[in-house]
Amino acid sequence: MVTTRGGIVPDIALVRANGIDVNVAVAGAGPAVLLLHGFPQTWRLWSEVIPQLAPRHRVIAPDLRGLGASTRAADGYDAGTLAADAEALLDALGEQTAAVVGIDAGTPPAFLLAMRRPERIRRLVVMESLLGTLPGAEDFLAGGAPWWFGFHSVPGLAETVLAGHEAEYVDWFLTTGTRGIPGEIRDEFVAAYAGSEALRCAFSIYREMPTSARQIREAVAAARLTVPTMAIGAHPVGSALERQLRPIADDLVAHLVEDCGHIIPLDRPQALASLLIPFLAGV
Image (tube, rainbow, N blue to C red):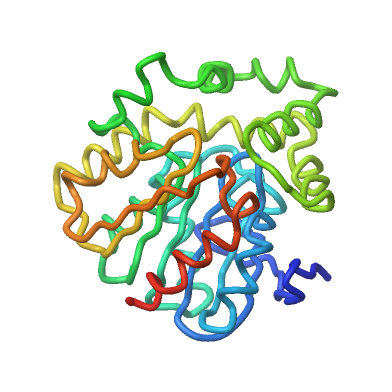
């Protein structure tokens, strides 16, 4: 049994979707909200947000393919396949429509799901990530992509170098610029990324970034983003994601969470909830 910091005990199960077993936490009742985490996290990223959404929504928080307790699949780490995983999970849980919220590596599949299946996505929230090579992030990328993108992208390298030092590496991502990660959640994140196979799955998302960027470009070339969308930035991505979305979105609002690190749901959960709750309600 896992209890969120708000005292809610979600139902946790393995659900078969798109050919894999997805570990998913489900809590609350009402219109569905699908929460997609990033690296190096699991569904527990949302532990302080779920209690604030569950009184109004059926909250669905999966571990992404290969991460946490979901199937460590051999392939399928491009954004398009991750979006297909998310849609199949909604099908398996009997949800015809949902709002979708993505952060970091969860943002590209959330975006593609809204682009490819707009009739199923009521609202889209994306945070602290870039959408492939779409224009608008030039200032953010002026000094080049973050160093770990290249490190993670070389097949077999990072997981070999990091063997035995996963905890120190994961801790760097969890603590650089982000405060207040509860110890039990930090421990779960570290355990989730221990071992070369866990790291291979995580780094496969980076290795598929060229494919994901192509998928995003193709989606934007074919259609506009019609789903009501909110872009949320903090540090370091800031407003770069908003600038990518502004030319292609019909209905976009954007916010910067001040004095906040990259992992917004754990750094400033109350500030995040104050943005999510009215937006998801259509206010």
